[in-house]
Image (cartoon, rainbow, N blue to C red; front, side, top):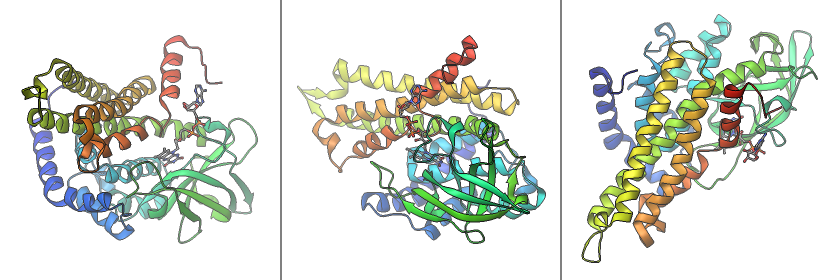
Length: 384
Ligand SMILES: Cc1cc2nc3c(=O)[nH]c(=O)nc-3n(C[C@H](O)[C@H](O)[C@H](O)COP(=O)(O)OP(=O)(O)OC[C@H]3O[C@@H](n4cnc5c(N)ncnc54)[C@H](O)[C@@H]3O)c2cc1C
């Protein structure tokens, strides 16, 4: 495992950082500060521009427009987007996850969707969660009924990232009442139709989280991903990659909270000296910095195992738990370091604290990550 970036990675990260600072963050910030939703064409423009720097595309095969790079490189790039503009990080994460699921689809589906997803010209959603189904993915209620050479899907999905932007949805539905009866389908919004309604949240309201309603949606059987009953296994596999992204979401936000705190603590004077010179503030800064590095190392280890094709659900869960809880903790500590200023909209840490609170929930909560880790160590599952 390499702890330092290679020369190529450093160049890629430096170039991306300059682009984010100069071209992306000021534009995204306008939307976020004014509480405006980034419209779909603008979101696609952002994603397409970032794909030029390797976002989404990095770990995909070149034949579909990918760059054939490793997951560690992609994580390094993704961290910079989170640090700059977390509202763009979620669509990148979800497009990458959706494209990864499609890598094992038919050639027809791959050729139709993969190139557009990797450049951000198409946007995808992953529909797993439902009003009565969160952590317990196996209990999905949305139904897909076979009807000749089609399936008819009925159900409601909720908390779906990218929903309002989505051109295509990977919908997990129940094809059988048995415990393994879940199946994934590719549903094209224009061709097959589904309705979307946005959900307002504590933060990150400039990008889409939504409900999706599927009412008698007819999709051809050829739009099934894998075979009938493979949906749960495919989703669990997808969670591994999503969780290292979520880890990077966490330590990317925490790194920003750290940098804002360093700056503020050097400038703000109380009791005759910069607050950075007070030991209790120094301790907070030192802890945050060490935890950001620890979180990144956990995620890079998991990324390396994914690249090596080694089973790493435990390592992905460790990275996800630690990195995302760090985001919530670092956001709160950054506000504390800023004192009263920390709770005003004038200072960025107010926003980071709200964004950080979200991180431990998607793609399996902290509690679920801990159960996965313990199951892997003891061989005994507390989940079912
Ligand atoms: C911003 C955001 C984006 C999201 N994007 C998507 C998306 O794109 N697609 C998608 O399908 N879903 C998405 N989700 C949904 C997300 O995956 C779920 O919110 C998550 O899995 C938790 O489910 P839940 O909210 O229903 O909570 P619940 O499962 O109801 O859990 C509530 C609480 O109980 C705890 N709990 C549950 N079961 C156990 C247990 N066995 N042991 C101990 N504690 C337990 C949980 O940890 C949590 O603290 C998103 C969520 C958010 C907030």
